[in-house]
Amino acid sequence: MGLLDNTHARRAAISICVLAWLMPAASAGSLQVSHSLALPREVAEPFGLPVSPIDWGGLVTKWQGVVRKLGDERVQLAVCDGDRERCASEAALQFLAIVDTARLREGRARLGEINRAINLAIQPMSDLDQFGEIDVWSSPLVTFYRAAGDCEDYAIAKLVALRMAGIPADDLRIVVMVDVISGEGHAVAAARLDGHWLTLDNRHMALVEDVAVRNYRPLFVIDQSGVKRYSHLPLLATKRGHDAAPATAQDPAQPRLTAVGIGSDEGPRLSR
Image (cartoon, rainbow, N blue to C red; front, top):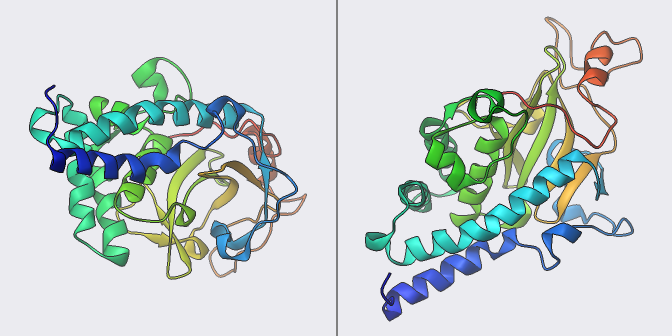
């Protein structure tokens, strides 16, 4: 590829700065958060629950692997954003086009555009069908290249697209949950708008506020600093004619939750 002119160089530099949040100052292999730091009030998590940072376990390993991949992809996205005519990656161009459209919108419309566009761009497919493995976490350009993925692949792509579209990193999360009815794990992106957390789910085109999510129990939340575990796990479920209530030891959902890894740092097995 030839040398970029000054305009292209400036665009590439801006893109690199926008994506720099994805690579913490510490190396991905040493991604840790001090347990002594109190969570600031202005960085309250989705579902309004306290969290505890974790620095080991299967989920942390998966996320560290994604962070390393994002480090490579941020360069490719920056170069393609600076000179799209010479960009050799159709996946990067498709991803950047979604970001471009979202930048033209404001507020909830911006979030909704990214949720809708990425839901339509990716076909739901299990990791076993796609890779012959269970629970593979892919970076956005891999997902767009294959045009297929499962819930966490959608969530990762949305997280990166939202950040590139101008949403502050402090207002973005990935939430790993468990369906208390089926026992399946699920992941969604979450974005904070006007003090409210909205979930971007690959199963729905509409944005759903966290307080309106039903039949799911949040287990872990991921942001720019790493992985955190919810300290108290509510039951986000309703029955006909009854309000939501916390699970008890006699709750019939409990055996299912144990089966998918609740109480461990491995995280549940995620479904489509």
